Image 1 (cartoon, rainbow, N blue to C red):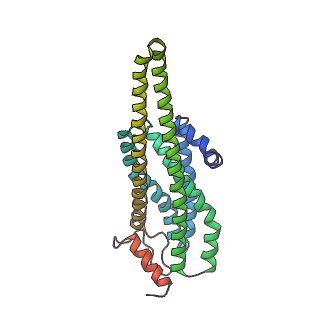
Image 2 (spheres, rainbow, N blue to C red):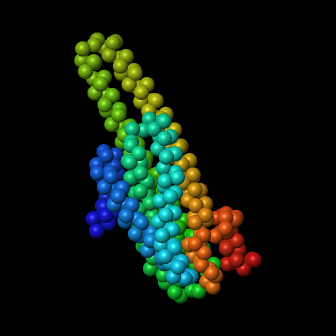
Image 3 (cartoon, rainbow, N blue to C red):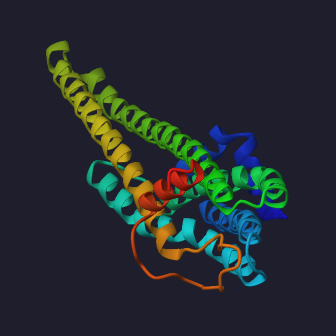
Length: 264
């Protein structure tokens, strides 16, 4: 239960949780707890969507849904970490992992909160295409909320990081000002102002990189989900752990939408 307590702490006081990650407070414990808690929630929701087919699909989806989010994290995390370091970040790899796991954990909780609704539609509406598109909508909504929270969290952490770096610079300059005439003291102040402008430029660059990374994260997640399919399993079809790699996620969603509308 202690792992779920960490997740509850994140949900109740996200600002404090992010501040502790920035300060490197019990980061390893946070990573472990968020990993276990989010995997459990994903497994529950995966089992529900897999119940549209066979018991084998239930077990398969309960394993593959947590794997989808965690493998996506592993694929995309190094890109964010090394690019951010290149542009001035002082955070460790573990801190970045913890930050992304906060997003994954929030998404898992949101999916779990939709579980009763999904189960209701699974029982009451025996329409595979509708159930598929309904869950695509749920995954999209929860993903967008999670990505938005990650973006805001990263912005707050990096802004606080830059603020503390500037405070350290102030302390380095201030003792010199006490012993220098005003004309000489103006030079460190000028250097500090130049440093502020440089930090602003780096912050803008890191913000753009973060936005591009979020697009990359979404694309990798969608395509990986297509690669790991099926998660639902069409009723009456033989169970397959994986399907042949053909087409792509976006094309299948479009075809399912046309089928639901009766166009094809």
